[in-house]
Length: 304
Length: 304
Image 1 (cartoon, rainbow over the protein chains, first blue to last red):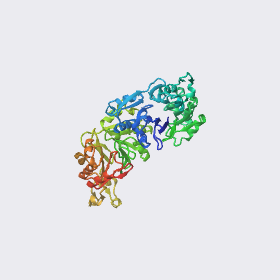
Image 2 (image 1 turned 45 degrees about the vertical axis):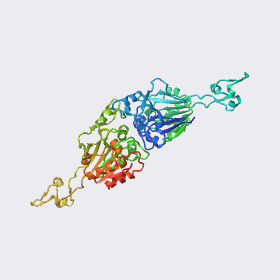
Image 3 (image 1 turned 180 degrees about the horizontal axis):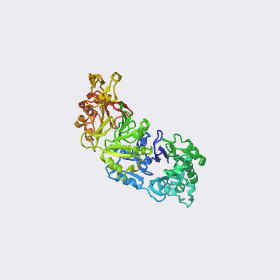
Image 4 (image 1 turned 90 degrees about the vertical axis):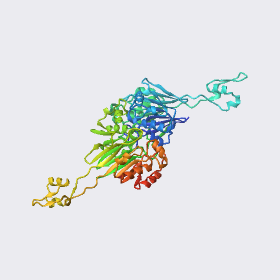
């Protein structure tokens, strides 16, 4: 199944000429998920042909403007575009209070669709969404205000049946389902065909983790252990380690250390301070610790 | 004195690929004023080299998202850019309640500068700002929610003294000031030099009016009578007059009728519905009633 991430923005608080603030589209098997929603997200979605109408789940990491100021426009545009049904906001509890306050910028009770809130849990790694093929977990980070990371995990697929076996043994639907779930096959004459001769292993489930904004955390290492791709903030180069700590952010080296210690497949860094026009230095510093690192840029799409 | 308007966005509720929602920079004699602040305004200001730090006065017509959703990001960016001192928001009273609510998207009490609110008056044409060279008035429009138009009027300049007169009559500073204010000059021998021989008329004061979103109003005709440039919404072409009325907007023909009846110098139309990729039809329909019409496009700058 296809599983990709599109970077709409990978800048930080101050938008620059070349980078928007944080927003990403996680696409899995024709479903799309929006992770963070900085100002201009809806415009970038439109420009990059992301179908706004196909969006059912929005994940907001925390309530700093560079991660959610685009939400008001997006929620309004969904309504103006004739959206019906339900939209789910997986978000800090305070966002629900903000949107339902009498002074909310968007009058959510007037929207043509239902906005459902899924408050993020303060307690460790917690399931926030389960779909047919995917589970999404949140986990707390350490920032100036409550902040969460997310993991998108494919569910294990059933075994793949070897096609030739179906006519060879004249399999019924019930037998096929049982074999895909691991059963052996007993023929009419009592012969047992072991499952391993009837099936091949399905592709290994893939996983993607999104971690920004935070200091370097051991709990993140545990939460994202073994994911295929980790997007981790690297707001500063290594010479700003003290400033990173003071502002509850990470350096490139710290992001790479988390990736290495968690044994992830690939690291993508982002959330760069506005001081960096080029982020080659940050990518270089991260690669010294974790070679399979890519520095995100706006518009980039990568496979999980 | 220079007096220009830069269109940052002239679209309406749904942002399109080519048009942002409403925001304009009025520049007068090195001062800049922001009129409406749709999402992405701060990014457009940066891209178009408008000095965000020079902004002291922001005018918000009404609290529909396509006119103010960029304000949260702009107010935050002013703070992150080290802004000190005072910023004035000339706005619907509800915006103050929104920003000062405990669930405000921006925590205004944490900003490094002081945000002053100037609530717009519901009573006719009202002075909302007076600077050394300019007066800005607001006046109520007729939309689904409270909405205001604005007029930027240059103050009359004093008379210009004819330079050669200064050495010829050995004028003192006090005499120059008196002459610029209209006094005649009495020489030591009692001869009176009439003011008209000492001065020339200053340039006529110029004025700019901003009118969106509204139905066609006689009170607007009175408010904007004789302005040099009128920006008036023309959300629809003439065939949508009924829809314009139902949604509290105007057609191109209605905008042009206001311009003609008010005897303005030039009409600029904008706030186009997202259905128009090209607005040639709207411009044509307006010119049939008021020939000196220009259809705004994003990025356009015009002299007042």
